[in-house]
Length: 66
Image (cartoon, rainbow, N blue to C red; front, side, top):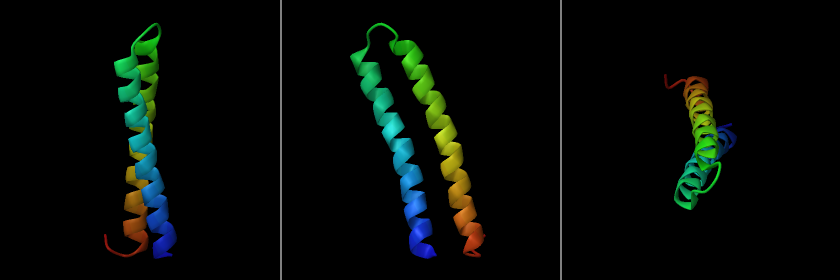
């Protein structure tokens, strides 16, 4: 169980990181529609951060460390 839960946490954190990087790339590229795309990416980031937090808390709870 620990290795699969570790992988789940890493995937969740990596997804947040990828969305943040995509947001930075979009910000520096600019252009037509960039503000709307940035807003959408930041909404995804917030949702993914919530999901990652819930996954981390769930893994800690399952391991009995909370």
